[in-house]
Length: 68
Image (cartoon, rainbow, N blue to C red):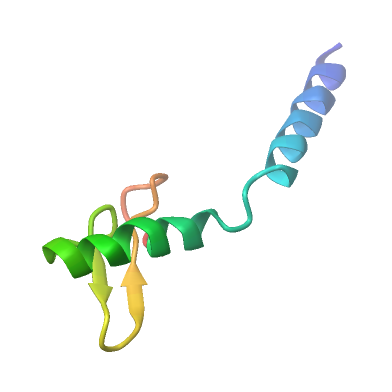
């Protein structure tokens, strides 16, 4: 019974990962961070947007010290 529960949990986790939006990070950066930096001088929800050098730093919602 315990193995069945673990197998179902693994199947559910892989199902969710397979249906995740592969462009989620791009959408956050291009639709929120960069426009906010351009309009208001604030990169929110990103930590940093450097328009001149062409990069963005975004704090991952998982973990205290994980940045993308």
